[in-house]
Length: 219
Image 1 (cartoon, rainbow, N blue to C red):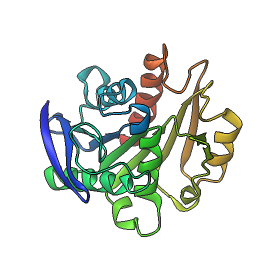
Image 2: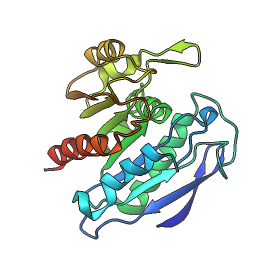
Image 3: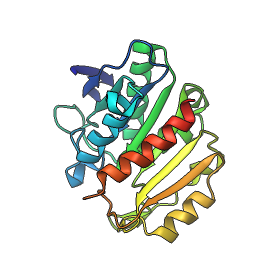
Image 4: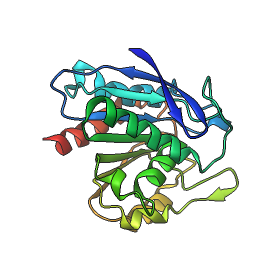
């Protein structure tokens, strides 16, 4: 693992890179949860998702980048709530320059929302062409006094996995089903039974579900 500094639109972004196998066919990017809730690239869900993409025991062995959004950790700038999607694009661009490999984009909670915004919003076709798949872990449909419908998913043709806890307080099952119903194909929705938003006590089940879907995508 090595430290990386990304040059983002709001300043330098602190990042960590886990190197992959020399013959890796893809690169991975994992985005962290809400900074105002204490989210960083060291979050447990982010770490366990990174391990699925990178660790030999899961067989994928991809190079994986994690970074802190603007205003988090040693990253410069201030939290915005929407502009963090530009930080995601910065990280994707860095991976493309470093490896010239299609990127598997994974986000947890706020990181999932920003990943969707970066890869699916109007004008993101050039980003989509460099992505292999999009994974939204614990995608929120409510929180901080707001509700979220993620309408850009309606035109997002990337292969998509929505993976959440069955008891996620930030994404009740029916609310998330409604969001996914309006998303473009291909897509899959998976609930980890009994798990909360942070997959507490169920991180291994989250990893198995994530690994199974990813292996189908990269065959």
